[in-house]
Amino acid sequence: MEDMKDIILEYVIEEYADEEDDDITYDTPLISGGLVDSFSMVSLKRFIENKYKISIPNDKATPDAFDTVNKIEMLIKEFLK
Image: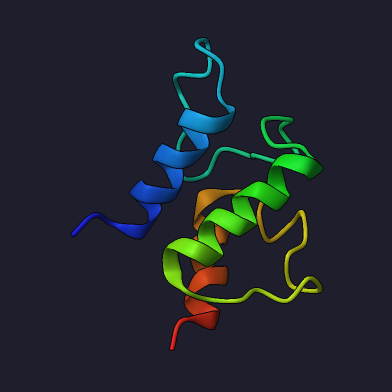
């Protein structure tokens, strides 16, 4: 089974990275670094909710919570049952 962080990282790279963004890691700032904007964050949230069959309340879906793959993983684990 693929690691959750690898799945998220692969999605982020495929959907949002340019060819020169080849050094994206689990700790790369996605929102504050400008890789993911507010519109993209909504699509990322939708991907995560569909992939993991969870619902993330809007008040928990903050730019800070989505700023790195590591933070996204922590957020997902909070809602997995």
